[in-house]
Image (spheres, rainbow, N blue to C red):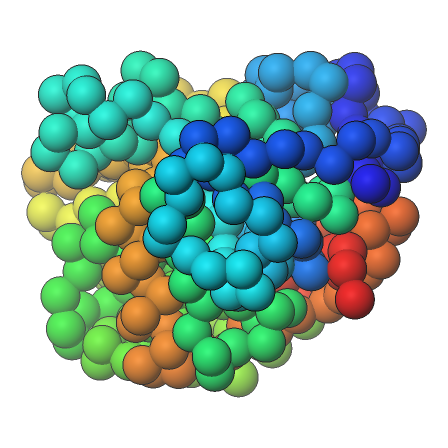
Length: 334
């Protein structure tokens, strides 16, 4: 099979992903073999490639995978051959620890990320345990479904952890793949949304999707925001978000790693009045299942820009530069 493989940490500008011919994986007990149709691209892959997150090298990246089941391992019964499935960031967890027992397998000490700790979807085929694959609602095309599996599912978790209530004002810092899905959930729930982003094209998309105000990260909105989600890879936006957060509000930081440190915070200005800062770690199976159902109900139709598998380096370079509108998707199969 054809696969784009990462063998060493490097800047994306050096085009470190290489197309290789590899054996088609064989599904083990309760695993399925998936013929990949598309795979979304994500900032997490940039973190892996450039060393902010340590993948198990060599690795096939990709954790927003949509394809068809073409093989069943021993004891696999959840899906039939030909079923369309999606695969998200959670590749596996132990299922036995205290976190797993209460549905917080995202915090499991043996958590494995798809395309990081195990091979992912930048390839024609991949295998995974049947419990970590999800049926895709019929109303979505393969390309539309791919961003829902990470940008959508983690965005849904971000939104739930923010504690947002109907009628409150939500601030979104950065407006990439995840934020452009979150805004559709928030407006569906009756929330007012302010978007903080520099790019004119991103600002235009935010307005199109229902933002009542848009500006830069340093701009002051018309009123304080009840909750905020920071999707940006830079540290400076944390202070900016806390500065415009209402008393008792919560800021959710929705990235695995920041490219640069969070600057010192002034306690009286940024954190007093019972403001909270919460990080987000991975997703659970429940997040993916609940969000896919909600996305079909609303419905959420992501803005998608497609690339060929061989263009993975180019696509990720554009993502780093903030030049992708909505979500980038690699077309892998037929």
